[in-house]
Length: 183
Image (cartoon, rainbow, N blue to C red):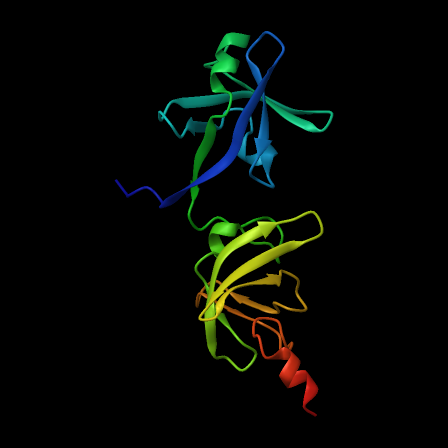
């Protein structure tokens, strides 16, 4: 018998308020793929106690995502989930559907190189803001925020564990003003 494929644990949602009387709960999503992560029949766990929950149904209700679990059949049970972190095990090598898309877990920890190929730090976090996503790059001079757009982050190589930044003065260094003033 072969060993199961390696998996990683990801947070898919935080349980919110109950919806209705039959155990449905609204969730605050931590995934861009709720229809995939919370599809009927999928399993997630409650981080705090390891309890397994099987998704019975999931749907958008106005601007909220609501989930019903086989193990939660009434409003009281749904209320007991409020605030629970729901996690799932996903294949470690899984990729998003889009060619130029990445999961945060694939980016965090990658080495960050400048345009000349010198290591300047590593990705510490990915921030998802309304205007755009930002990479938090930990450098010797402290953390720097880099807009996660192709023009500024043109090369991402998961195989080598490296991200190369564009040659933009001031993107991650503090001497942009000095360098920009000399011509």
